Image 1 (cartoon, rainbow, N blue to C red):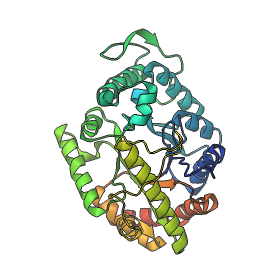
Image 2 (image 1 turned 135 degrees about the horizontal axis):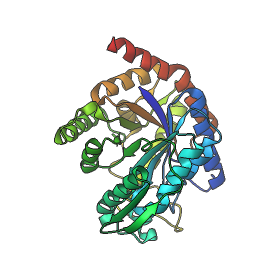
Image 3 (image 1 turned 60 degrees about the vertical axis):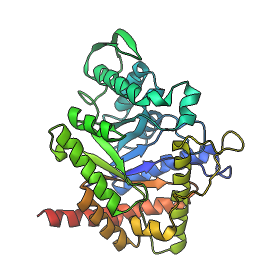
Image 4 (image 1 turned 90 degrees about the vertical axis):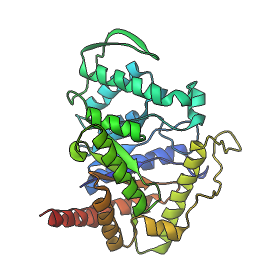
Length: 350
């Protein structure tokens, strides 16, 4: 089982400077390598405090110089917000400076607030995403490519800065059933999340994966699946409650942005508003791999048995959770949780 950290770089309030949020995120990526995680993923968002990373490829390029073994990924580049021709060169550049360690995650986005400020119609995002991914695949695979589509018309064009990994870096897709089916059709990997839900949602996710594979006449194991999950191990109730509080904060903002509500008093900082979708800390602890080290290990093994992912992406950077405590958490995963999970899976497999 591969393990990754997912770094959102959220800012919960003005008591956190943007500089401190970014530097903490970088420090967590470096700590992830030291702890033995396989990958560090970086999000992309714009124009508010939900996430401060405007370009995950810039984070990859920077962290490439501070690390040597961990793979560095975009989760995700929001394709409809890019000019695909330029993005191709930036993908090549990032993979070069990372010595072939780039994992390229792409998605269509969901926040109208962002799309409006880029002048992009969010209702066209699925179609734009599909066409732009076509362009990215052409540009990565062909020395000279051209494209004649609904949204872009590109004459014969060469990308001078090409990826180290050939023909392409591993490509990961985020999105719904249609994108999952495309992943199977073209041999890409994909991300899934159960948010803060429990085993029933994971069972539903597994059924969706199996349907997508069957629709393309593929085996489920033909592509890799990464499960993004909030996880935390501690015997300290205050630590756990702080993590849960920050996880719920993040979810509140995500739901508000997804539902196209703008909750902002000053045009930047989003107002955190309780909703009917809020879960109690007790329910979140029941649903998620959160609690003692043994509880986290046992719960992860349950979830892996149901969903059968290839990677668990642990959400580390949440709101204003204490940085030193999070760095210790990352170290704890490397020392105890990852080895124990893999040992149990090895025994089960044999």
